[in-house]
Length: 309
Image (cartoon, rainbow, N blue to C red):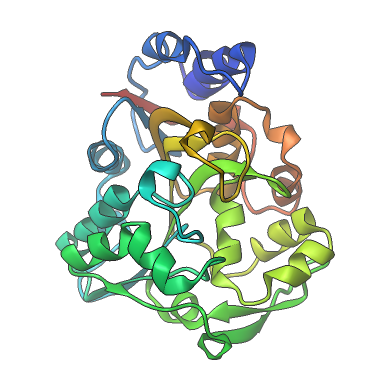
């Protein structure tokens, strides 16, 4: 197989056939779908079957190593989803073991400092603590930074935006040398799915305006802003299938033990929809962002590396 195969044929087709609400038999589908990949460089790397840190190590190695993005002495901002005051097993936030490993790799590549933050929905200090992300970041030598006060945010123009013409962005996004976006894949009641582009709503101040003015268009608009993530890592270890974005219980979760890595937000979001069990066209902001030139949702144009642990 070449390029889009595991997603569009192996993984995607199998999951769609089985239905997103029930992943019975999905392991067999995936076991036959991961057979290695073509020669690099890769546009997207997908890993299945391991633990979060292990899968990130493998994806990063295939992509060329962290030094491809982080140089000695640079500052890095890592943006996971830390929006909810829930424990890791609820899948409402990015897996803390993955965030910790990303911070460790940044320092190994020579980063001067690594900052981690989110503009949370629940009380910020409880989200940081109970997600497990705060402890993981501290153990790795990184620094948690609050995102709950408007003074951290600076108004910037969104020149190519159709609805969103300006927005207030957290200063770490504007000032850091490297920006790594680390969403968790999950259901979202308004946007259908939270993935890479949707995760960027946590770097701005007034998200309510977005919800009132065509959420999907605003998500796509913001992605035209010049400060895009240098790297996107989608955590699909525990995937919330319903009741998102917060979830109700562990009954909402499917253990998919997967991870994706790409520089292209549109491509990685399109691939993640297939992993979830729907088509990219069912998430409006993906098509809008593609039309606006943010990236491509056509997976046939990508060189994809598939790894099975």
